[in-house]
Image (cartoon, rainbow, N blue to C red):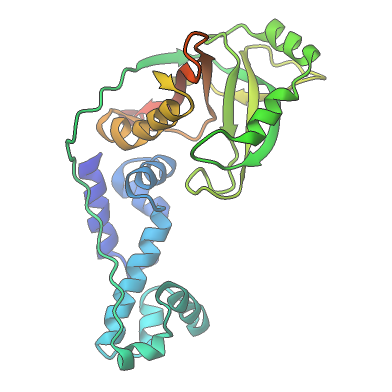
Length: 290
């Protein structure tokens, strides 16, 4: 995947002045749009759209320094109006485009390249599981996006579950892992920024799709799941494992992540306060199945 990502960076450079879409880039990479955007963000720390915008504005800055007119530069790098370009450039650089030739201000944003840096060797245990179509049955709520630490909104959601809801979850639960799971989906920023909200569900896996008065049911298609067990301080170990799935495992695996709700479960260690065993279930598919 790293080789493909570097080829994508070259492709973007060759088409910076064209009407370049994420779908075109994903087709070039031979991957789904969702997989490419997700892996790129976890490796680079910015979204693919932000990267393209920053590269265009950096090249626009260079062109302005060479004396090209603001109008010429704006339209060359994809802006439909001078006002739109001026606002974007001012927000990005702090200067108006018309000031660049006089001030000789140059904000640099280089082309990215990806390489493997071995710093200690991260060993990741995982298994591949095939699941039939099922439903996530539980209680859900919109909660703030939070990458690190304990999300208090999720804690409050767990505390709100009634004995009747727990009893129905127990009765419906008929598919592995037979645990209370946490699933997050429908994120405002597509899980690529720590902003906005997402829907978080606490519940079980069931093959029973009949309506329920007490629980919400979310249909999940049959598919393949990469399962990552982890154990250690909670929630730090689990969050680090999740980050390594995208930064370490996916770029070197034969799988790509798909846009289906993933889930996890956690079992706290009674003998070690603050320690837990967790499993992260990530929906994937073989790359050659595209």
